[in-house]
Image 1: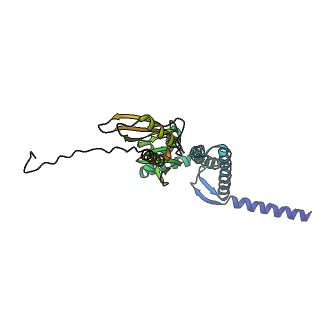
Image 2 (image 1 turned 180 degrees about the vertical axis):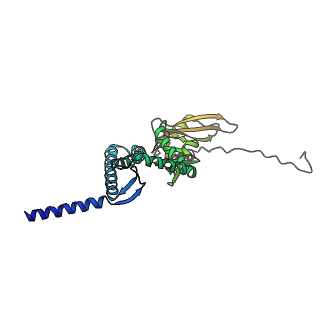
Image 3 (image 1 turned 90 degrees about the vertical axis):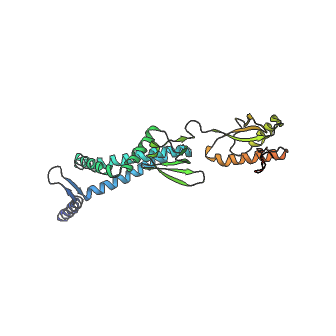
Length: 297
């Protein structure tokens, strides 16, 4: 009995030591009933709760994106990034509230802090608001091709303050989110992913347009990236003084590669016309030379 009582005293003493350690105050703000007390136990609970939340969020991300394609994963990731911020904040506030800390005091203090920061860091808050606007308005989604401030690129990530664009020359541009509110955006993917592109060139006035059209269609539709349905077609734009002004239209499935594909189409047009002895007419210019001493010459 004495041995059991001794073990019980040791266990109780160890437990009290653990409780005392967890209740050890690291920080105390205020001296009344609404004072904020930060203990070691509170810090441990916060760390464990945030760690478990992170694991759960990653599990949800893997389950949701398991059957999505690359563009759909990018779009979900943009929403996921914003949702995680709010979930972490909710977990943080819930832990503080359950520990007996009056959240209203923290909210009041942070409100005053945010007002002061808002004056000093106005652009930062504009970027955050811009990020929220992008997600809610869906004007720009991850995976879409856009043009903004002279940059054309694919949106690869949208975060709380910035968005990243992958340009056609494989450079990553980081743009602040407020630009998506203040600047004009050209979205190549919002309406249809497929786009139509045209290449202008000239033909001699005596050319057989039907034959040229069939030759170019057969060659151009074989270029990787050019759709065979709908087929490319040749359009007579206008009659010139020395040439027929033509435009070859074709459709692309991926607008992001348009400059490279258009270059291949131009080379194919030039190669085809050269093979069949059709010379692209050059613009003619008549130059009249007059003598200064003899204007009638």
